[in-house]
Image 1 (tube, rainbow, N blue to C red):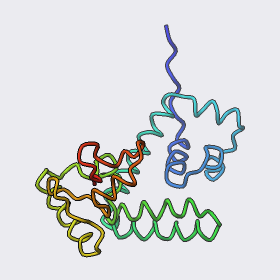
Image 2: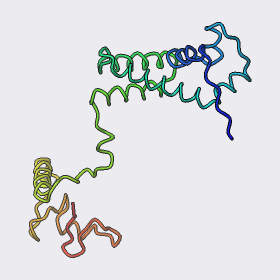
Image 3: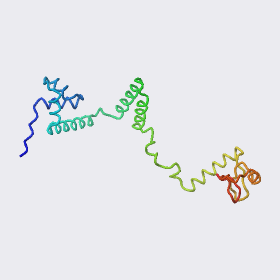
Image 4: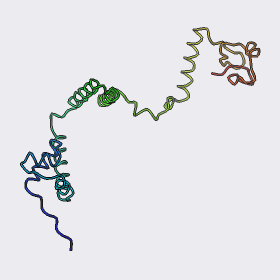
Length: 185
């Protein structure tokens, strides 16, 4: 028949609170409570299921308390992120400071890079939008004198006419349409 686990000693509950709230080790928490334990005893205590369960419950209670604090606001998180980024920059951890600032920008909703990284650039455009953009682009190039209209099908031939394109055409020039000799956009 399995042995019943020993109950936790009363000082251990205080040690658990110190471990959770002040991020102390078990030996440090026990020392603050006047209990001297060896490293072997600390390992044995931390291995007990009841101690682990009590520690987990105390952590969840602490996290719930922090999360429900009315002073915990977005502004506080942003301010703390900024101070941490400044501290990292002063310590010469520039990459980590930049990462903290990027996280601050995400909290502030200043960037949506993560949301759009998998979306194609033209993914939300229909053919009418693409045609309109092509016309606008062609008008800009026309204004610069860079596009000549072609009589072949109203397409844009680029800076070369058909005659010039035929004279400079290389068999390896894939930018020219093989039927009309026009440059394709």
